[in-house]
Image (cartoon, rainbow, N blue to C red; front, side, top):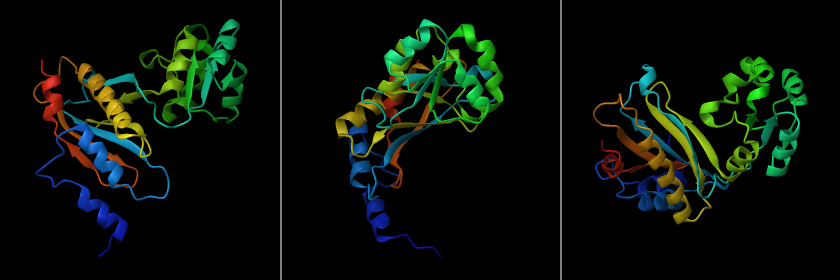
Length: 236
């Protein structure tokens, strides 16, 4: 039978028992920080189980949110545009900009994390669907990455804008920072994410919407938050 190491065992003792979930986001993120034992700056993520059936189009939960304190990760942004919009993207902080990258992507180049495109070039960008789609890199109007306001889109992404979408099992996963973040920053990011998720509740969703909320670091144990805190906020 496999045995856990001493660091893992010590971290696990800090996690509340299943019968007593953490009472607040502040308490939860503090435990996540205390239970972190890796030698690198671990990511902190939130997992939310929703009471929706993603098989039905009217119950798919997706959206975007700008985390107040970012994710702690440097995001490489590509702008696919032409004319003045290329310059606008570069001035806003884009790492790469220009239509020449369409061919580069076709040739196998993928050294970016988010792509922003203007509507007038989507005819060319659409050719990249088979390459970018499976990797979650395809620009999308719903994600705010197909827009003529290139400067705003790039600045928001650089500031910590993330996209979320419910998976086929009814769960959401999103990064909310790093273990090195102060507790108040992690709490603010978590609360901003949860508020957005609550507002994204589909009208077709019946019964309990927020079923469980768990935060964890890359290597640490999952710390459950009392979902009733968000059920009250999301009551309709």
